[in-house]
Length: 355
Image (cartoon, rainbow, N blue to C red):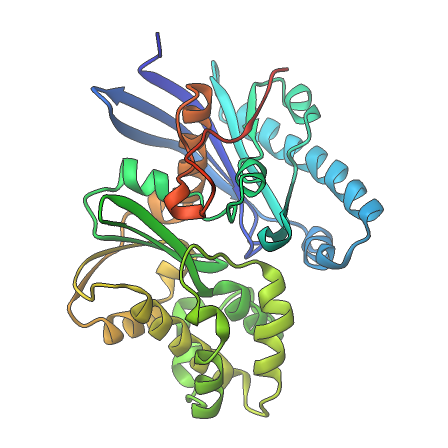
């Protein structure tokens, strides 16, 4: 018999490199309906050294990647152990961890999330459910996005669930299937240019608001092949590094103008990506705090009701959903949807490591 209550830790590190998100969560299942409660939560920032290593890892050799994976697993274990100890968390059913994406090349049958080595279970002395993407890629899927099944189970009352993180992705129901895909780069690009001004990010989009749109750059970005592809489709940091940044850097305009133009680009691509331009749009991720970006999304979708939830849900939704994916894996229930990833069939993905 399955349990009806799970006490778990969700752990997530996103492409925007703002740190490791940890959330202590209780899930409750009643008559097939799931509810949740987020308790203690925190984002542990990376050191400058780790940010540099993670940024540069896309160019590492196999040997350097192996060493990085081992070192990162130790770092992640320390972060998790400290969080459990500090918050006096007991009787966990599992720690459900995404790890950190370094390489994502589903077209080549390959994806790598570091921090998912089996020894993490021994290091933290807990059962660990992790490495959720590999199986999907092996089944011919994109390995992403994985959050939509959580949207379907936990946030079904909204027409669209939009996440604004390192990249934007959306999920929604269409003809009885959950559809989801990545839309465009978001904070991977906005933070890159904020960093050039000595800032971690563009607070509330104030710098972007002060800039002007470069019509030529705006047009060139909107013409990219990725936007013409049908879903399933997903993005990785390689897309930003090899395609987006080289295009933006061709233009001799101010950083303010680059930020303004790219913000407009994000907003119009989101509007174009949604098949129905009205209803309710539930927005989470760090970009939900970018007031100017939210205004531009509303501008391009005037009939859409934008819903921004409480801070815990904005900041820890991905940790919450990877915790749910871990619980579903423990129950051997479907946690990846083929309608979203393009895999051969729905499946229950992830590795379970006992300590």
